[in-house]
Image 1 (cartoon, rainbow, N blue to C red):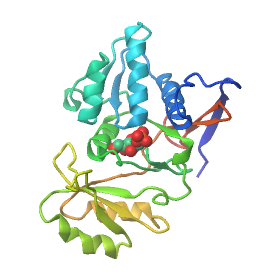
Image 2: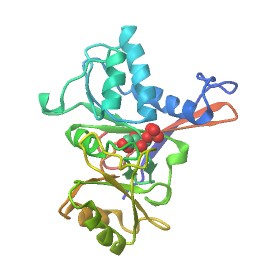
Image 3: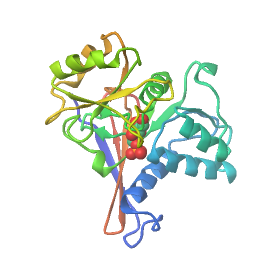
Length: 259
Ligand code: 5RP
């Protein structure tokens, strides 16, 4: 299989454009800024969830307010994204109002050299996957710390399940080699997704041996709603790093998938 093709640009050697931010937030913002360059007036957009997406929304809101873009309509993948987009004046619609979306943009928790992803630490995996499957193109924004050789080596794999008898999945997940942990909030209560479902975070040591096989096994189990494995769906990953105040943004195009 041909390897993904990277193209890299370097920012100012002295200060990053967002020098008030921590290096990691500045990297997320730089990835968001480069990704905004993929957006054209009139597009329908899938809007992911998380801190990187919040930077993207800020920049998109600014571009709309200043008239650099117009005619944009977005689909939010979470209440958090919906609230922020509305506050920024980004027009929203429901996913079922259109047959397809021009572009989905989102963050990630991990990405591999093949551009496979683990997502869902923000709990929006189901809606994010539905938006990605409706989009003609999916561009992922990441800071350099999200790069891994193998999925599951840095982040747990989130699995959304129906509330009914959620504990009944635990022996099954353990038999798959995972240490499953119910995601809870600060109050110790189960954290529920926007769909009202709990999430089990599957910890693998040292990593997920075969993500494609795992996806099949998980998705064919009754009671599992969705997993955070996004395999073979990213068209590109925009990776940004800040080092010595210098910004490095790399656009990695997935081999064999449409640009
Ligand atoms: C939410 C997600 C996020 O995209 C992922 O957790 C990355 O978040 P952040 O941009 O805050 O690092 O999948 O469900």
